[in-house]
Image 1 (cartoon, rainbow, N blue to C red):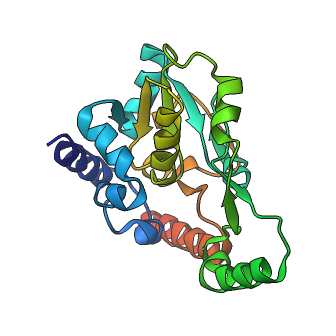
Image 2 (image 1 turned 180 degrees about the vertical axis):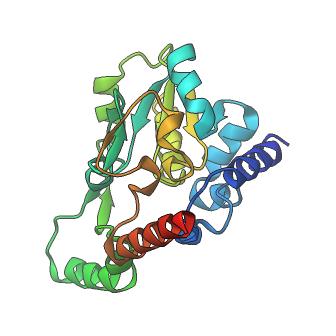
Length: 220
């Protein structure tokens, strides 16, 4: 029931966000409907109430009014485009620097199917993720941690790992930064709007073209 109510709230919230149509192409399916595919444990944590879902429009209140620490788990190349001021950063995925023949073949396939279009690097899981979070947020019992990524999926994986690491006050930015706007947070740094920071590669230029056409349409 909690997931159904959350899905309804996210969809209602998304209707009021003014995104160019292109930006929603990678997110045509509801984030909620993919929770079980990404992390069955995260689905159980949300259903049980052990993890609190927070809509982007509620994030500022959670941070300033309730003392939540925003933990940004995006890779560095996304964060450097735009990030919330004062947020902590521990990437869940790292750029894979292995250049063995098998990995190079995987990188080539990845570039052809994903990397060229999205600008995303070929990555590997950060095995030190929980340990690095512990160094920045040592109080597992009392610290309130709002975990966020671009689309809300990688953060579900991060939440599962953090809960296994005995963090007990976790919240999830539902839909991720892609469903947010700069005004949802106290302050945002970077050269891009935070909802577009995940977009790269060829798709970035299509996005800029659509934004330009949208602006021209409003003027005319």
